[in-house]
Length: 163
Image (cartoon, rainbow, N blue to C red; front, side):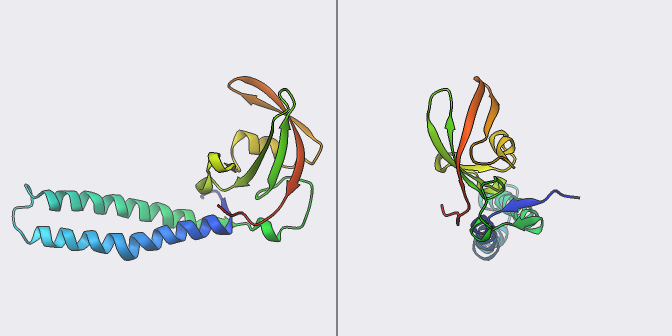
């Protein structure tokens, strides 16, 4: 049995769009190329045919992967979540590193939506796991490669995630 694939509505839509693009645009184009290349004769030395078949395998593999991700998706919309100061999936969290006083804002999203530069972290990442079920004002100790960091949770909101 697969584990749940928690994901935001936007993340779900992006995966769905990629899947439809592969099925309706990319795959049919490659199939045409492979068909044309196969009609040219000797397939063993036909670069278009060889590359096309390889690309078809890659596309089919990605399609299977995306189908599985959607099949086990559990869409959680943070915008409709009841307001709370406790951290769960979809939360936008502002925290402060106690040692250096630096504030940072992150959002807890699905594993398919990670974007560190935009502050989107996976719900299974170490920092998210340490923060889940904590509240505003709580301090957490996070083990990092550089040693322990103490973080204080300053704010928790649930809003629509856009990226």
